Image (cartoon, rainbow, N blue to C red; front, side):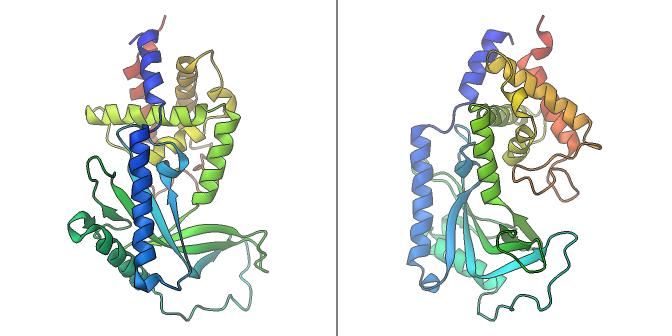
Length: 305
């Protein structure tokens, strides 16, 4: 592939969802909100609904436009203490209400099933409840029942020092803490600092992964992994080069170097709280290197004179 071909391909790859896809994504979110608003068990209940992931962060790509929605209970919360912080005594007042992990998920599933119909709802997933796509109407929807989460950073539990996140209890009993607001805020800041190239290159790398995985060149990888990888490239590199082709090439080179040095250089998720690589992740350093090298070869950067 020559520079002209690459430039044309990258110009397509950096584009977000089409207007039609965006309308369908927004319709899906509205329908989920309507489902919860109409559900009797949620009346007088303190909860929040918000989008997360690629849809919220505007890093989704054309023809790959699912929607992730969180319904987060705020009547109670889960919490942990930050590393090296001595827990306070007494501890926060225990919750004595009726909501349990199992009841919350069960009522979320009931609300979604009432709205979309049992045939289109799959509640067997370990984390999310999935609503099937309807061609021409809505994309696939993943609904995540969650709880408000706090990480206390001092013994007095000072609100100004707390980290607020979202806690998900998987069906297998595992607790998963996410930081969607931090991810969104940091992504917006990086995109502004790079003149839009951050999200351009996230979409381009996601498209590359889609092509390579479909061809069997690499294993399929979670789309969030590509967002994480590009986030770990410094702003100056993303801004380098006279055009997108040169900038994308520089990004791949920087990622290859960072991934090769990962043992000494800890990379972070866009929330800047969680490490990108650890034993519980769905990806590895080797997968990142495979993606970068395969993308480099597919685009023919090694053939440049």
